[in-house]
Image (cartoon, rainbow, N blue to C red; front, top):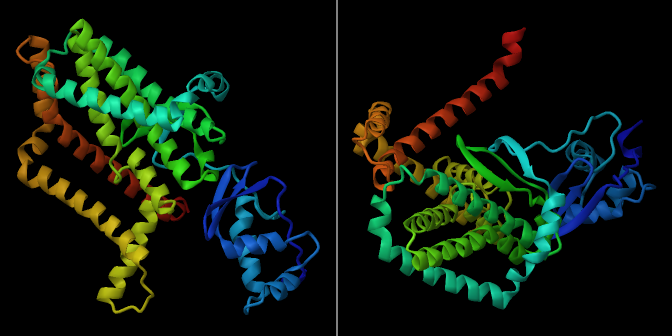
Length: 399
């Protein structure tokens, strides 16, 4: 059959959600694909009624649109996601994010749904603002007063309470995300674990929040930090009442983790908040692409239309790369001794702990933080390059 006579059929398993003033998300529920589309493409999809062929649609759309263009958009782009029905292609379910490895569900959605109704009052605006201010005041003054003691505190006999209290705080962090999702009427998944940058992470499946308004998505993304600040302030208050140093220590660790989560250059809560604030999904990829485009325009004299949004995206990507270069420069050049002798220093430190000549505290552990992060990044880069190599040359090698 000729292309212009094809009658496109839209899947019954899709829903539309407005993402911004000029874009929508199409959710293919059966295969769990969420695709951002322009307002023009949304209008085209609204014209598909199961009777019009591509030629009819091209005439109705107008503006020089031809059947070849509509065929490419509908069948080649949207067809692979199951949005437009195609009998000649097998649609695959959405895969887990590539940056999250060995993920698994710990708390299923059914159990979470029984708990979140009792926590949703915490997202009433007046309650949330009041508790946030109170928590920050308690944490800042409590930790500043005990900071030196916390950093030098012996953790050798405190590792079990640290693990239990730490696990409780990260679990509540994820409950913050799912409770906010439920509060705004979106559907949440389960809470699980996995690995990111070779570090164990906890995560909550809240992908359905794309249907919410930007302000609501930002609150959902910040909700984990909000819950952690609440538990952190609670630890500090109880520690003050009962003079428990271990609670002060856990409070500091949670607070430091919260600051880390606000970093918009890692795939943490700060990154997702920034993504929602600017309304650009896949911020890493899109900003890097825009930086390359602007670089070619500057150095190769390519003529492109540049908007303020393009410039801001390029600046974000540039800062991202500069931070990486600065980190590598510090570790490899300025602190090369720690980098080169990291395995030996770590082994020596562990042996010292076993012999009783070294102390286990935050101050001594901090010396290994940057070298460990550096090696994790190097290993990650090497693995990604190997994957790219085998993906590119694997078929040739097998042949």
